[in-house]
Amino acid sequence: METILYIATVEKDGSLAKGALEALYAALELKSTLSGAKFVAGLIGTDVQAAANSIAGCGAEKMLGVSGSDYSQARYSSDAAAVTAFAQAAQATVVIAPGTSRLNRVLPGASHRLGGVADLHITSLSADGSDLTVVHWHYRQRMKAEYQRKNRPWLLAIDPGIYPVWSGAAGTASVEMVDVALPAVRTQVTGFHTPSADEQTIRPEADLLFVAGAGWTKKQADGQTHTADAERYILGFLKATQASLGSSKSLVDLGGEGQDVLGFLTHLNQIGQTGATPRHPKGLSTCCHGEEPHVVGWRFVNERRAINLNANCGWAHGKADVLYVADAFEVMKKVIELL
Image 1 (cartoon, rainbow, N blue to C red):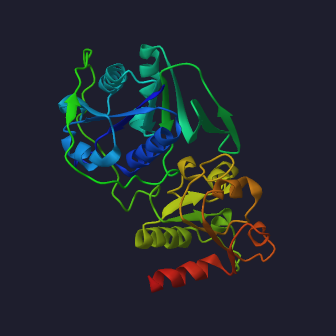
Image 2 (cartoon, rainbow, N blue to C red):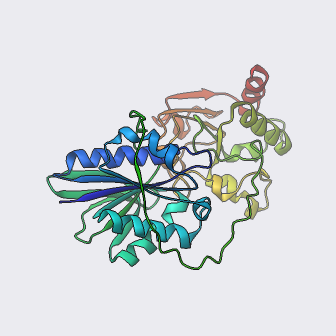
């Protein structure tokens, strides 16, 4: 009989993030299909009571918590100790957590302390009787593996954007605080330096993914490049819509060929075979030919549209729901005026 332990970290305002609620949905779905499974929840944060109340209707047999200033920020030593203490207190055989940067980095260490095993970037959980099967994508989500393990406890981090958000009833939860053997703390978190909202171009929660292709920096109809105009139009659109920005590999690598590049793009913006595979509801590609290495990154985008002057490009061959055969400079200039 498996005991499922759900673990999440509490946000600064006392809530649980979207990814944490998605992982909770995954854990409860697994519990309903895994024969005879028990379910326990554990929360880490400065004060976990409000978060515990928000998921009081999840049906957990026990609600565990660790709180205090030591757990207000991400730190390996304290977080790994808390995860270890939760698993021991719950006698957990399966631990499910959201795949955040904070928990992804501590689950392997905690599994070693517990004598178990950890797997990150899990995209699916399923059960047949008492057999648990997980799915893990490889090679930028171009191949997937389904596997089972006999090792316990089995710590699993669920990638965000896959499961629905849990939306059960709130209430008043009874939280059992767990004693943690906290090691000597050598790292002090003094604060954060973050870019302003307008400077941030990667927005995983945005409804729209806007992708800039290499055509933005190539010579236009007048035989000249207009990189400054391209930057103004793209950034203006992002500011007006709060869309997330992606790029094709060719555009990111143009600098190595001595060509103009858009100054705000990095490899973190790269979409496709050698980049990210985002999960936005809608996507708009501009000045990109829609070739397979780039389009593979769009496989989880629900609605795909593209702007390209070439009516025979890859987007026109079944890879886009709508193709606008037009000059992206003119289109985006008009769109920004309308916005």
